Length: 192
Image (tube, rainbow, N blue to C red; front, side, top):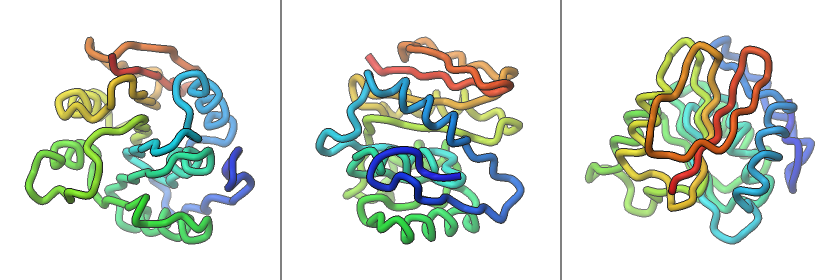
């Protein structure tokens, strides 16, 4: 698995020595970013990205490679988070601009309103990726927390990857498109 485009193109991600991680394939990432190309310009100045349930960090790293200035990686497994850190070091990605939060996605989002949330970290993003373990069935709680915390900037993009069994039942974000890859669906939403 490798970064497919941008300044880090060809950089190998992983391998991930943990069975619970299901990375977004190179082909899927390429299709996702192609779909996003008309919605968000990652190379414009000061684009902030949030990679929830980051796993390998491939989605956030792809965004950085394409020009995003900041990405927060949220991964609840500390061992997996350490692998993201190693990949970032290999890529020369600055951990100040792109920190890793060891937390589950919902707790991270809900924690943004607490006094412990670092003041220097953003509370709104231009693009949020969420690729949780399919069996966890957490996309609706994550989506609800994104909406409740107003985590997307106006016009911001939310990319949610899931299997065909899970559906996202929200009425606030505008549904842009659904990409299909076998048993996997990727829903793309935009805040209005």
